[in-house]
Length: 43
Figure: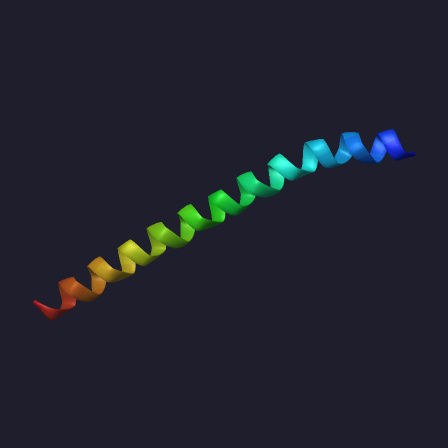
């Protein structure tokens, strides 16, 4: 059982970090779009 846990963790840890980076990119894009929309309305 222990080797199986190590194999699964070696697969899941990179997937977790890729998901974290993907979420950060989505938040950044949303923030930039909202900011440009707010700036555009002021003009």
